[in-house]
Length: 301
Image (cartoon, rainbow, N blue to C red; front, side, top):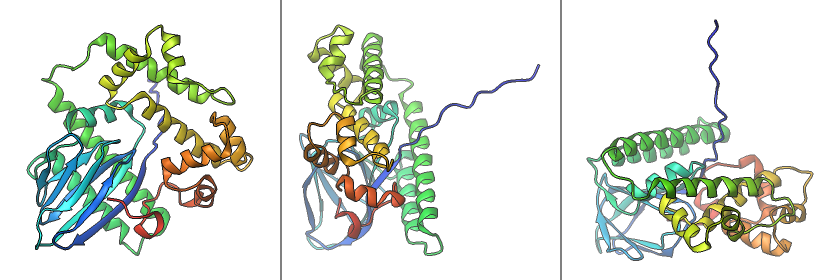
């Protein structure tokens, strides 16, 4: 009998933006900000202080890193008034809700020192991305693919390290809560896929499951580390991008299919998600999923 091996469906929604390596002078600081993606900050030289709202300031030096979780209000500054600081920074997002939850729960929003395997993997990833970004022998498509491969490899390493370190830990949620959160996530995804002209809310999801909005919100956040609204908005953003890539749909069509009341509201929301308008996104489709430079997308930290 011949052995049959099924290959799973693979859907990789890697999104990287605001990446750069920068050397700043003593006394440098950047304004308070918040992103709907992870932010990796790696220190090459000097010391940086990161302040995340609700947490004590964290100062860290060469080889150390911090992964700032989505939705965290934060500021970054040179810890020295006189010495320069060199860092690599980029923002990234991906599809796996399970891995997002693990990163947010186990390693985000805290300094990871240079000897830690996570810091080493993060630093090497950042250095590789810079190497590919400045390699003039690569065209844009090759650079794009190299960076995507690098990020996927990084996420694979993080998953393995986190799983190994979590084996001895007790889950901070019950199996009942985990099952409820999984069901909510599944219903949200199904609602997004079938959302054409049928708006829905998280309240509708909770009603369908026979639970209160409060319990649903608390449980989802507890299990996955992000709010249900964040998850819904992220899924809508991905769906909006797919629709906008189809020339047969106008921006108005996409707005209606995503449940927006007006094109204006949809455009504002899309710009909040991506930093650009739906029309400008369409113009940049051929450069989709590339790391955008400071001159192309604004200055991110």
